[in-house]
Length: 274
Image (cartoon, rainbow, N blue to C red; front, side, top):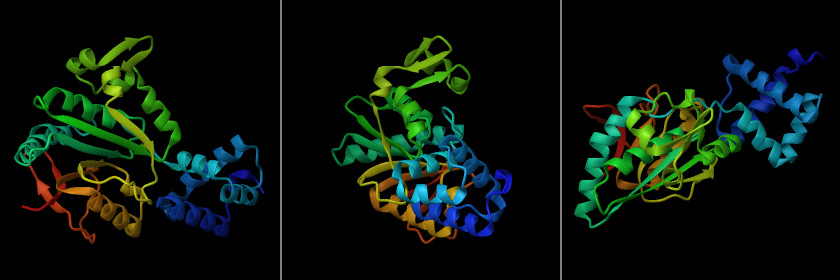
């Protein structure tokens, strides 16, 4: 059978279901071609020519399964992606949290960047916080992803000239070092973000979060997986906390306790108790 037509309906169902059960990522018939192209790539690189043999391989080799999940994950990101979200973060969310924390005698803002890809989002958050947090306040950022390859890039903190196009001259001068063919995020910012491998189907173990960013991730999940992830977020967050999801994503119709919040800058969700 030519490799271009290697997935039968049964094979497609087997791979689709296995990937879904492992990660929550859902491949519908309409995006079947994406799965097929990613599988072709893994067949070439693994040296396995038979698709059924490769299926047995991923079910018995956890390393190859992680590599396949890495391959099927879409990792599109950039610094300060969605300006409205960052304006809301800087001008609404952080001032509200600072006021709330002061009233409780606390001084740490805890953030999770879930689905951080190659690190641009958490580093952007760290730069803003370094600039605007009042004296005596500190922050704790954990960034996670399903892609080990992306996490390696994130930890290194080196980005091509093209990748830093969204960074203002102010931040570029203050928090990056110019290198041949690109820029390196300065050590003080790199050290302020903890990167970790995490599959959103599982409990992250994180608790008492003040802000969660999970943008353009749940769009790849079906309704059941979306509800599972969102409810895990809710349980991991403080009672005065904020959730940012992608501009094309919504919690409308979900069984969730998050409240919809509209600010002058952008919309988001919050877990709130007075």
